[in-house]
Image (cartoon, rainbow, N blue to C red; front, side):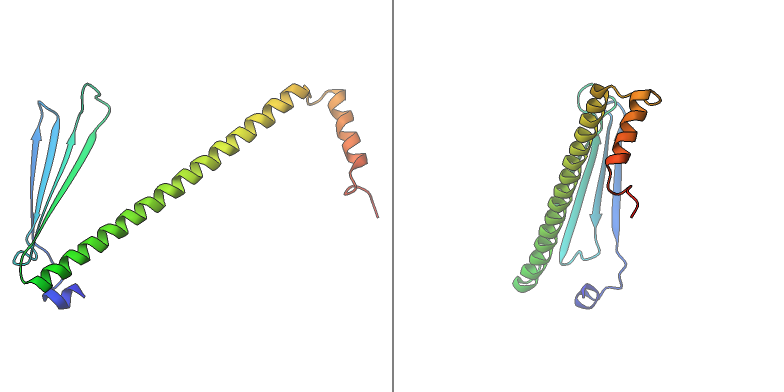
Length: 150
């Protein structure tokens, strides 16, 4: 759709500038996309930096600026396209977080059940190889209707 609308061949033009400040341990990447420059100017700045004295932690900050030029209908159309894409990304991110939280809770529940089972078995003080364990198994087999022959 975009290829036909803007008469582009799928190739883009962008310039990226990378700055490294070793003293402050800061890496900044600035990218300007010139593909649709008569209509849209997009500038993105990404910074990676160390906050405080935490040498093993890297912070990340991203900023994107979008300037739309042109006639009213074209400007509104492009704004709507970008807004819908942003809403979709936010929805996907929310869904992913919900799934991850559900998995995390199920994992906690599984670990809790496993810990309770281990504690219960330790309290019963059943020792594999002891006569009490063998007798317990024998009683279970006798009382189990699945083991009865028909």
